[in-house]
Image 1 (cartoon, rainbow, N blue to C red):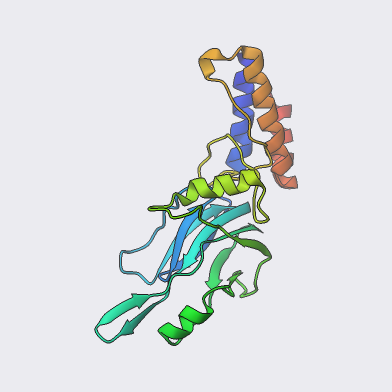
Image 2: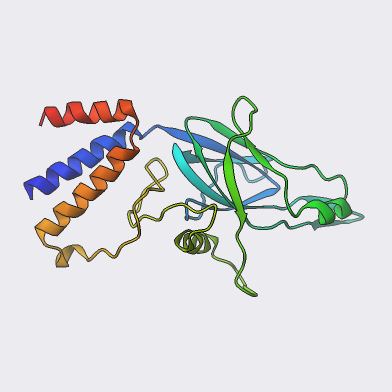
Length: 225
């Protein structure tokens, strides 16, 4: 029990170093953000604002989105719906903005929206490196679960995939890790040895993901125990 408590405290120390390490993703009104790191996103911003934002953790991230520009045609407003794009990228302490084509007409958008030419720009206006793919639907679907589809895509090893973790995290922690999926028994069924082993594995993973400064902070904490 004492060892488990120390492991939990150690994990807390590592997590706290990343508590305020986050990147802001700016989402324009004609982009539908469908999933972030295999979870349904929670955007911030006014109901009628042209842009909304979401904080994503520093490190590897994955998003799913659709570009949906709208056009006034007479008294009607018609939208053109692009593909569901899944993309992964690495980022640290940035403000990212979408760069998307500006279609002048409804017809032009229909013809050119797929394949979509887009980028994510950093705070200096420079495009960041990313890997993208189309998140294909499995037949006709009513109300797609994009978060689950992204998870299934990652498990299948898609080109824009990330490793899946069984650890539930908030958006200020390591949301995507290199831990392979595995079945974890309930706490009541676990022995103290099994619990300690899982904590050690998780601690190792977080340590490997940490920056040199974070590792040094952690080492100092361990030395004081």
